[in-house]
Length: 344
Image 1 (cartoon, rainbow, N blue to C red):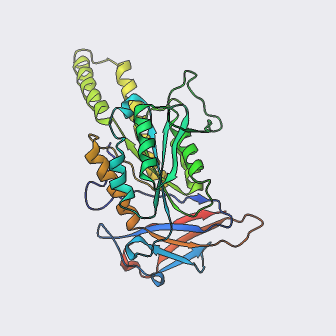
Image 2: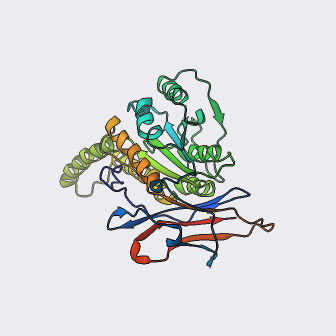
Image 3: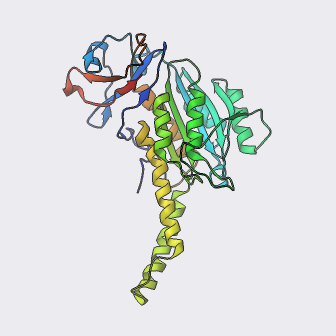
């Protein structure tokens, strides 16, 4: 199995997107989408090129933006979340210069928050455009220093269990970071980039995290680290198992093979966060600063080619469910990617 290789080519991989649920009050309700034609993003759409449906009926909208048009005012909020286990921290990815060049210099209206997690979630810096603040946060995370951090509450979803010895709470950390960044009453394009080996120590599932991220309007982009090493181990083990079974046809898979298969499944589950939230999953054969730069450049390109339609919802005492859908008036323009959301 391979996820998308981090926008290494010209166009980002187009992941299947499910309809997110967004609880809103008086803030803008935003619907984000891309349009694709022959493998490339379509630029230059105008307000009159699309229609917004609310429970199937057309409704007016007050916001129509695209970064390419130069009229993008909707802010972008990027949460960068690092698994603090050794297999992740040893990859050398906490270089503030890369994040400055790749994100801060690439988008005028972006702010970045930094988190680290194990069985606890800590915020190393809130949303910021200040390079000094960002650098201090990444350096503190890298050096395990005593930075001024904020503990973000996380908890097991209903009916889930954890290893009593502690470990890594991946999906709980995703939920906690999504809730934390969405506490600001600002309508924004919210993106999460999470680095992990995918090996959690709870029974929580990607669907648990995706449900909350959808409500908060957060698209998650998981980056799998260390998968190639596991695949090498699995190939070596399969060769051993094959040699053993040729001598003993009734031989059953060893415990080692079973454990590796379980790890493979965990990685696939972690990667599914991208598909479930409308983001992208990355499984690079190796990870270094060059690959990280390409991932960040891809995120910037994704935002720059993104369209945003928005409006201020009417007061709804009963909390009525509204399914929003953006459609192209002329379907020959291209294929709509995204463009749906449920608000309550």
